[in-house]
Image (cartoon, rainbow, N blue to C red; front, side, top):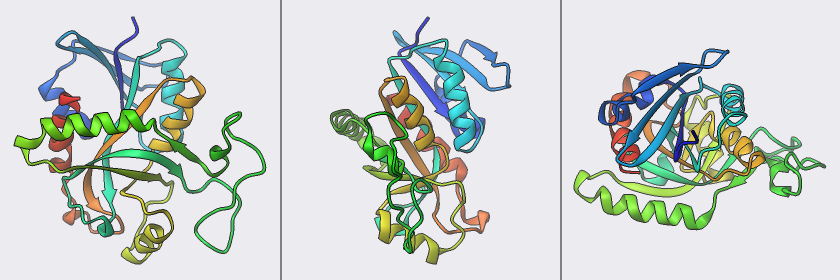
Length: 239
């Protein structure tokens, strides 16, 4: 049976608070060990897939899933680093307007790459720079609906571009350089990979993340993963 929603998350801990609110009723493992939890919220069904961290794990897990099922919508979620320049704080939530895998393209003297001489997705020239826009109406409607739902929860929710990286940014200086080039809200490691696969299978996708740390902060004692996961659990349940 095809679910209404497929939720993708890199690790169980990031989505554990959602499962406390909306526990699944069945669990299965893929041949390569990814966990799929199935459940319902009211009349809506969901599958939740723990993909493992990073772009390669996300792309593999989603491909395995979509070869057998066709959800109505894909939600990529999880915790992320937020850029200080946005004015957002740890625990705040954002919806991606687009994803960009910043290590795609031809190297230049800047952090920004030049486009590849070929499409990575047929007839999609933005894929030459690893850019994957999300449907604007869906983003706007989701943002408006969640903003109304979260008024009493004091969870700020914004929207803006995200970047996907394979190297975690390790200093505020590097973070500032990234922000000056890409103006992203959040940095994570899976979104662009999932967006690429979703585009290949022509299934709509949104991405919502909660900030666990500031990009460039390598002192993990200053991170708040539990707060980010709690905020995320509420948002996913409302969605």
